[in-house]
Image (cartoon, rainbow over all chains, first blue to last red; front, side, top):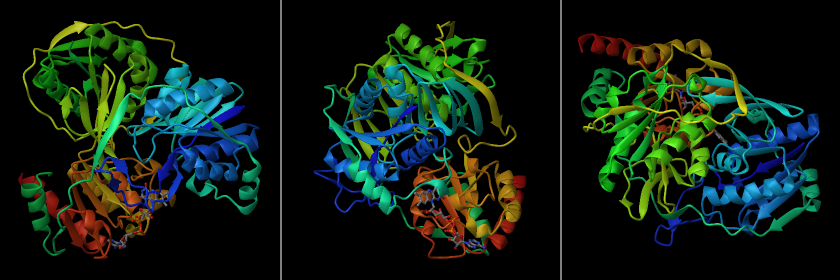
Length: 248
Length: 319
Ligand SMILES: Cc1cc2nc3c(=O)[nH]c(=O)nc-3n(C[C@H](O)[C@H](O)[C@H](O)COP(=O)(O)OP(=O)(O)OC[C@H]3O[C@@H](n4cnc5c(N)ncnc54)[C@H](O)[C@@H]3O)c2cc1C
């Protein structure tokens, strides 16, 4: 089985979010970049397939040279090869279009992406890849088993879960549940050393227009201070929630 | 050229988000000087949609659509958009709508903006405001394609009543081969789901153990709320994973979020920031959650919550 794991290079959750150039660009000064958390669950599941069932795992990212440390980290975790499409990830469609080309050229059976990235939260890439290559698609995937050409998956739905069956080629939008958080891997020294020998191929992007443009950013208005209510005066809390906030 | 809105229903009844997205579609239609057409799938009655500005309903009755499937639903919405020559398609931000959206976007060659929180800033060029960085910022996005697909954030736009004519037309789109078969659906039917809840009562590690969850459930019961928890609580197995909210769990965009014994770590806040009003009950006055909250009680959950339940019961009885 050939697996492609799509890796987004995103600011670590605890990063302070700031913008520059008149609020038109994300300010990455002092920001630590990581593998997108949803993708990390997918990467670990791919490692499981590799170790338990035999699979070849490639990771791919659309982005500039600055994303290579993130791809190297994925190699150190155990992926066999990495591909960087040397383009600027303008929007989800542009990224999906590039990755769809990688999938077609590499004949992958299983494409694992995260349900969304924690920077732009678009939730576009996995479904668009599936749409572009006409593969089966499961979003919000929290469990995945593969048996030959057949797949059984569980996906999250509002208020519960749905078990579905499908077949390869398959694209999933994955999240926590694909593996437990305690199973996520931290690259060890040996992994880091061998990652240096593994192929990281840089390919030039297709010429394709993005469908949307990011114009500017805003930060939410600063919050007013919390109104504290004494534990001996909970009637006041009910009064505030009823008459001031109007939520009960 | 009307604005198309996909309205969700459950067991044949329109969901509240259906009226929210209809209200949004009407606001766009007003800006563009056009009408609103809704698409409703296996919905018993669509008459309420006209109160939110819907002029025409394309009503689909097809038993192969009884269970949601992203591909078939996307195909149905695409065919409706083609038929209506719609240049703007509006959907919700439910798990299912976010599932079908990218497929629909590819099908329609429509630029997709998800998590949109306001009516378009302008329609030529087409600019919308959406959340980004897991609710830590907003992004103004310009959609460049001729057809635009807008995913509206839950509870962001609200319900706005406006008259529409609501004429119903039967519609039979062709449904493609699915490729995915639903085996089973496991859903707690008697419980309010986090996604649909107006109020969410959430407990953290401060509750000390699963045996103490009675007070969380009782408080949720009094308020007609859904229950939720922080990540360590589900990791410890005190509560099911489906209740874990936050960056790696479920997003919450309720009107009221009550956090009990939860510290307010950034990863937790990332998932619940979109909630309108936040109440925190915590013993530690330095808990970071107090900085994000609207109302707070510094106190022991085991004393405060039972009292609050009693007082709320009295308040509800008198209402
Ligand atoms: C990559 C990553 C992703 C994460 N994603 C999430 C996520 O999605 N969701 C999430 O929740 N967390 C997430 N976390 C974990 C997060 O950082 C915090 O560890 C977690 O939210 C803390 O949960 P808690 O507040 O319940 O527990 P604690 O941090 O243990 O806090 C318990 C709180 O209860 C209070 N307390 C104690 N006793 C009482 C009492 N009797 N009455 C009232 N208050 C009391 C304490 O003062 C304290 O503030 C993530 C972490 C990482 C690294």
